[in-house]
Length: 359
Image 1 (cartoon, rainbow, N blue to C red):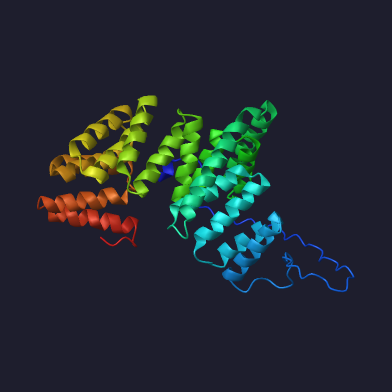
Image 2: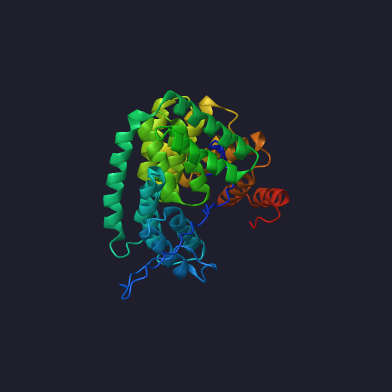
């Protein structure tokens, strides 16, 4: 689809791993006995950084065993940075750590990440069991959200959006996570966090956050847009179609929704008649919507109706003279009907607009 830019608050996001300071533990003082019993102690303070991901993972587990959970988080994050494999073990261990710290949403996100990765040493079954427990904990805690927490959560979402506008991605991530911490029932917080996960290509996490937003608010149209796009990226055209059907039910005058559904019909099943019908509906709602004309041209060309396709592409470039794809596809369609001079002219225009685009 060419419509990712229409999703609200989308940008190019830097990946953040929160490195938490390791908590040093005082070594035990031996008692002066004649025959001391050997005791195994776990070290949670080291003088040198870990040499590799395996060492960081081992240290994280030692910290977790010792109950030093902040230290464990630090080393699990370092293990991810250092490329320890299998990474599913890191996410599972970190989920256990988040659970111990009472950070239920973060633990849920890590469990869902485990389930999106190949199963390693029954990580899937363990993560599934933990996920059920965590969701029960979330459901039990929901009624306790105060009005003050809700207001603070919404304020954090607004602040996160402001951070995005300023391209301060560290700030944005912190604000959306804070919004969820304040109110785990805030659908806007999950939606905005899903957009960050989408840009990081963490599709499983993004889908989980969109689904959570829609569970909390089944009328959240932005989340339907985002999830339908994610479904297309992951090849689930049926899921995308279901979401766009629901979106159109909620907003029957939304031209973008019809255009996106036309794309799903084209990409998923080559259903040209359905795509044409949606394209015509989008244009009826907004005759100046250049992308709707362009996508309608694609549907006509796929169906073999070249003259109608040329007319649609021509309308698209008249509304948006910078639409390189419309010039290219119109050129290809001119070639289909033997109008080679017109085809060459369109390809020349496309190359002038984008010299890097090989036609």
